[in-house]
Amino acid sequence: MPIDNKPFVEKTGAPNVEQINREVAERLKFFEDKLRGRGLHLVCGAELEFFTLNEKRTPWKKILI
Amino acid sequence: MEKDIDIASLSRDLLQLKRDFPLFNHIYPLFNHIYKENTPGVCEIVFGPKISEKTHEITRMVRHYPYADLAKQLYELKEMLPDLLKSTQEIPIVAFSPTEKYHKFASAGLHTNFSVFAEDNSNLFYDPRRASHGYFSPLAQKCAEQLLAVQKEGLPIYAPTPASYKRFGKYELAPSQFGVGYSVDKRFNSVACRSLTSIPVHKHGQHQEDKHIEDRLAGADANPYLVLLAGFGSIYKVLTEPECPVSFSGPTPIKKIGDPGKACDAALYRFEHSPLWKEIAGEKLHRDLVAYFAQNQGLEQDRSEYLPGFR
Figure 1 (cartoon, one colour):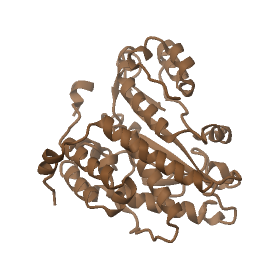
Figure 2 (tube, helix red, strand yellow; figure 1 turned 90 degrees about the vertical axis):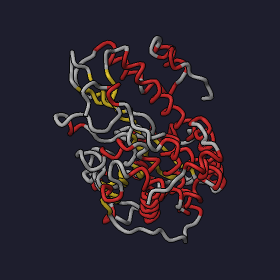
Figure 3 (tube, chains in turn orange, cyan; figure 1 turned 30 degrees about the vertical axis):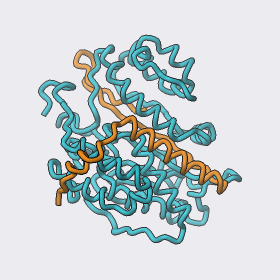
Figure 4 (cartoon, chains in turn green, cyan; figure 1 turned 60 degrees about the vertical axis):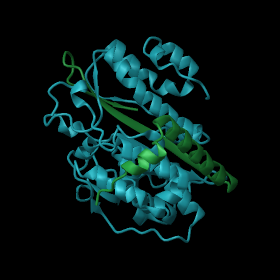
């Protein structure tokens, strides 16, 4: 099942995360423009959750963003 | 909103951050809490059109918010948090598997919420005639099922490292199956159709603007840009190809699909050969993503750096 991607990576060179993010941002913009052209608006929100450890005071804190 | 953020300066001057970057207003109370109060307990901060009694206002506020900017902010926030927390003697841990003792807190990671509004301000995910479906429209149902298909074929996005898979199904608030849930209690599903988070759907069926789809699969280690792409791509596909059927095979345990260790390889194989993802991301981006994941697939978080003695 696993695929050997190494030749592909070596041949093309894997993009770094900044390049990926930029490309995805362009794609998101593309979706947005197309839908606005149809009079539709996507609404989006996000929660990012981390856990922190502070041994002195409180063992765990959950941070929701 | 196009501003360069100097991440290092954020921890030194939160007021500057507040002034320069209005959306961080929501986050400011959290930092204030950590710095000045440092009291035990859970901090909960609203970011985006979530999900309180004020959802209506917040939803309107962010309606025209550029999505890529939202991703950018989340990304920068992820980058920034460890530095910030270090200065408060806190040790940040990405959301999978802390310890057995505190396992019940391990859960969410990165959730994204979506809804679609028409020009007359009506929420297309709301249908007043469908009380039996929690007032969710057929469109919402189809978008949720499409997102499910996208999740199944796009696991490298949601779980980028082998350790990411340890989170699935192990803790009560983390998803354990690919499925769509229509209730706040069904947290084991990877997609949720929701109104207000903490209030049962049937009590708020009349609040149409609250209706949204929640993508619950991603861990906190996932890239927010890519998680947003999965959600938007699904909804975009359904809206632009309404006749196109969704291949939905019912709830599937995530563990069955991805076991730690083998999971990354298998997930990458599915992603690479997914016509659905080729369509959503476009040929070039899809190719780049495959190369990107292939490069990183063996990557394991160095958890000992975050927490000595961590298993």
